[in-house]
Image (cartoon, rainbow over all chains, first blue to last red; front, side, top):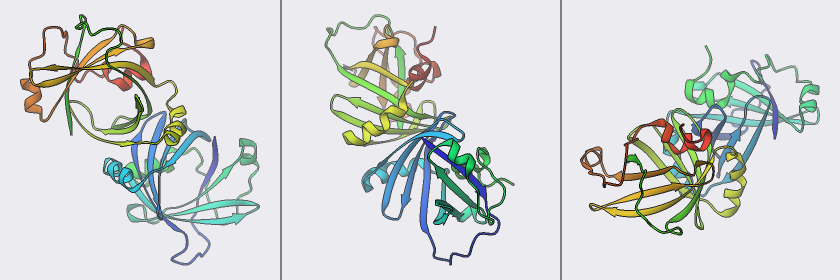
Length: 151
Length: 151
């Protein structure tokens, strides 16, 4: 079970241009009930399946070798995105700050994962985050990858 | 590219009760534009991604080890099916005869793959096949797995 909250960031903390780790991901399938994602993060190649929607989703991930990843990757065409992810400690938690690149440049999103929905509700975000977009389908990565950023 | 034609079979040739190979499959995601399937066929564990719809679809498949397969399999719950597949030679081609089991028992489908849409159109099916259901979404395996057999 994955429980997370997500916020837009208009004024991110200064991390330096090379901060964080480059992530490239693409979607093999996006269904109403589930999705399957390929992600390259440095040398790590991962396939992740998610099921359900909203605050909590079932999720499983497996590592792929390079051949398997490269066989599947072409099928994600038109449903890809790139971003730089930095991890920022805050109040005993880790905030993932995603700075999008390419066609999504300008979009910055902060995401926090929790062990339960109760913990998620009790979280107090830092001052530099803006509007909460938890559950807003326009800011799901699968939506951003296939339809681009909201107007 | 995968080009195939599909037919219902009401009077299959007698193959014996143990003929063919047991296939179990489940869907991680079923989208309007793509799907991802897990399949166990004997000892072989395969993940297949398909994209597009209709007569021709892009497809890629990779073998998974047991750990990866078992990590992902629970996410296919409620979207699974079992069938026994026999391969029958006919007119220089191989017909895959799928005899469904479990909740889909009673359904028998013949499927033939071709190298091009032209070859597909020129195919003359054997006498024991019935109505053609190529392109009929009710008989897609992903539909059968999630919604069951048509009435």
